[in-house]
Image (cartoon, rainbow, N blue to C red; front, side, top):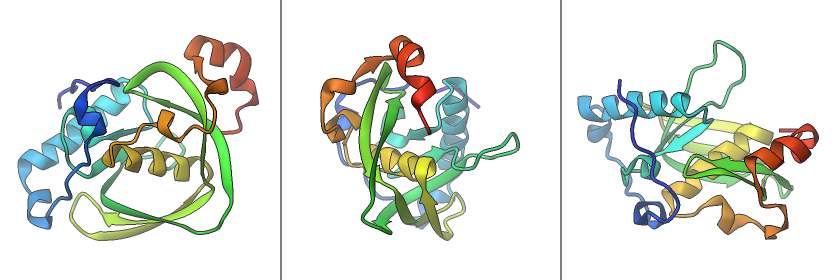
Amino acid sequence: MSILKVSRMGHPVLRQKARPLERSEIRDPRFQKLLDDMIATMHEYNGVGLAGPQVHEGLRVFVAMLDSGDDAEASVIINPVITPLDKQVVEGWEGCLSIPEIRGRVPRAHKIVVKALDRDGRGVEIEAEDFPARVIQHETDHLDGVLFLDRMGSMASLTYLDEYARYHARDNDD
């Protein structure tokens, strides 16, 4: 596995809409290697999610840690379609590997369902709420050229990671 270069805010790939994958592409060994490399890269940079555009691939795919626990494995989500399951919107702290050292409070749907394909091209439907729902929405935004800063209602909470850890992390319920 290889550690991939992560695109940073300002790179045009982060503002482009990624293209959907065909099932036949998913089975390609090169794509399967990309998935393994994305998972390794996410872990290397201590991320909880990583989308195709963040590694310079304009494909509708992301990997994410949606389950907690020491034995949790990364989920692979391809061609996601999100539907909110209730009207509740919750504001929570987010960061991004493409915007290093920055955190901000972002409003997101509290509970969602995502329909997608898994790494084998099989259809999956995942219900998520709280932090996993936030991760899915954040990573799906990357596939549409949207950064978490675009979703912030106010820039007043924008902070560097050091100050977040010093003043805000203890209040974070996520």
